[in-house]
Amino acid sequence: MSSAHVKFFFWLIPVLVLCLCPLAVQAQDSANKTTSVTGCLAKGVESGGYYIAGADGKFWELSGKVDATHVGHKVTVQGHVLHRAPAEEAKYADNEKQEANGKPVADFEVSSLKMISDSCK
Image (cartoon, rainbow, N blue to C red; front, side, top):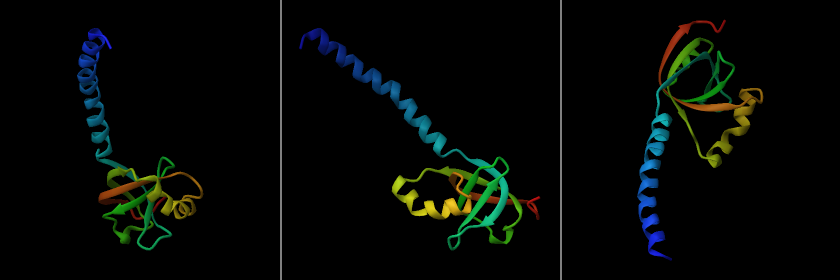
C-alpha cells in the first residue's frame, strides 16, 4: 500500500468517527424522549396488563405506573416508547394481537397518568 493511501485512511477514520457520533447520540435521545398518548384505558389479556386504544387508532401496551381504577376512562399517559428485543417482543405477540384485534401494537413505559374523562366516549 502506498504512503498516499495510508495518509488517506489515517485521516478518513477520525473524520468518519466524528461524523457518526452525533447520529448515535441523536438516536439515543429520541429513544428516551418523553411523550404523551391519549385514549381509552383498557385491561389487557395478561395479568396486570393494560393498553390504550389511542385517539389516532394506535394501540399501546402499557407498563409502569398504570392506575387500574381508570380502566374504561379516557386518560393521558406520559412516558416513553419502549423498543424491545425481537425475542422479548415475541413472548407477548399473541396477547397483543388479541387486544388490538390484529392491529400493530407499540410498547409504552408510563411515568404518569391523568384522567381526562370518566368515559371513553
